Image (cartoon, rainbow, N blue to C red):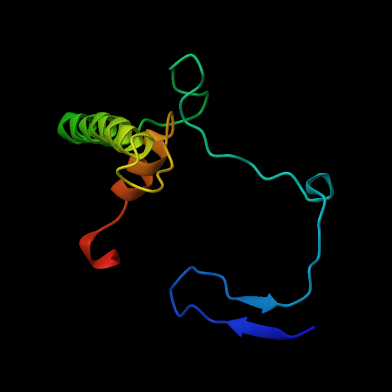
Length: 110
């Protein structure tokens, strides 16, 4: 097959290769990776975790952004159902993932 190397040029981004060969890998054959978690399903800090140093204002802004995304989701989903837009993928229950990952960006990152 044909291989092409991709160099991102970005710090901390791993270079990788594109290939024309399809190689199916069974997930159970891969090593298990740890997931980062600081808050348990009971809403309390996990043992040994430290609470992030974030101001109440930042928490409020993040929460407002998650609620705003939920409202926008509903509006755009309804518009799609009415045929006013052709396609829309909802993010039900995933607002924290979207808002939280974007919250770590600085203006110069985009």
